[in-house]
Image (cartoon, rainbow, N blue to C red; front, side):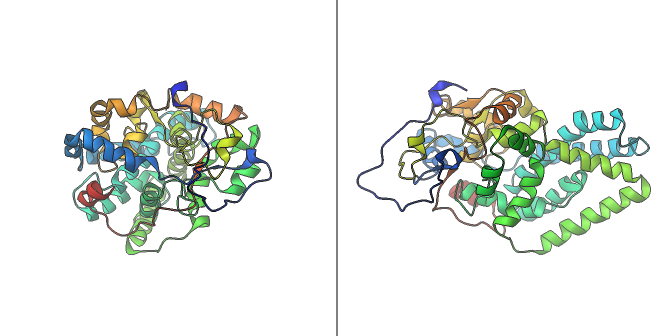
Amino acid sequence: MPSNGSATVTKTSKNKSPPPAKQDANPKHDFFWTYTEEPHRTRRLAIIKAHPEITKLCGPEPLTKYVVLGVVTLQIVLACLLQSTSFWSWKFWAVAYVFGATANQNLFLAIHEISHNLAFKSAMANRLFAIVANLPIGIPYSAAFRPYHLTHHKSLGVDGLDTDLPTALEAFFLDSILGKAFFCTFQIFFYALRPMAVYRIPFTWVHCVNLAVQLAFDALLLRYASPNALLYLLLSSFLAGSLHPVAGHFIAEHYVYETVTPTQRDPGNMVPVPETFSYYGPLNWFTYNVGLHNEHHDFPAIPWTRLPAVYETAKEFYEPLPRHESWVYAIWRFIWDENVGLNCRVKRKEGGRLVGGAVNWKETEVQA
């Protein structure tokens, strides 16, 4: 990663004495604690001031629903074609890895896009369409993902609210090459189970519909195809969140790869360490431009097709930021670099808020 994005060592402000954070006996095991505001709101306001026309990019993208329907159809067809293929055959796993994992990661990120109400203007239409995008994933999760993810945006790095953050136990017990390799291989389970261990969201009628529709779809696949057809979809979902190129975005988005010193782990640090990183490579074609992650966090009401325009419009803000050149290398370095681990995340004790209920994209445009 470019050296121009390295975090800067600073001293604690003499005018403000932040409350003490819990200290690890070994600072190597602690996170990057900060008492600054998350950076995206500040940069968003600065960009809007410099380029007010950028707000015209907000709003739903009609193309999203057609891409989703195409990928859902592709996965159902492949599942049916593999219904008589042995689960342990190289063909089954090759198709699941090359096509299935890429397709299901695309659907994970379609649900991510839809959670911001960017497929339709109607919030209800978005929530129901996310259930359709969920079908080839095999496990109902779209309804639960939305409030957790929107809270991630409103509470970036906030301990106890942002469930994208690893827990202290994860960071401690997986602090080794084997531990990090285990995490990268099975990270789909960490992302699925961790939120429930942090806090529970209310079970609503949308969750009921998500559950009922998914179980009905799985039952139909078992009845009219075979168990292997369902296993193909489940394997695709597992591989999509494992050691796969497109799974690199999970690691690349918010883990701090910049060279830092023990001083920067001081909870009194009042200057932020960079905590969101973009990637501008070809894998964005398969992942709804999720690599443009600084741009997405700055403007979550702008859909995937217009995120490149955000970068081009406000290039002077984004070019100096540290970035990833490769998601594959991001995974490789995460595992092998002793200076990078699950504790390389920025955490803050205060700020943010829980998000639930319907969120209109026009409201998001103003408030996000």
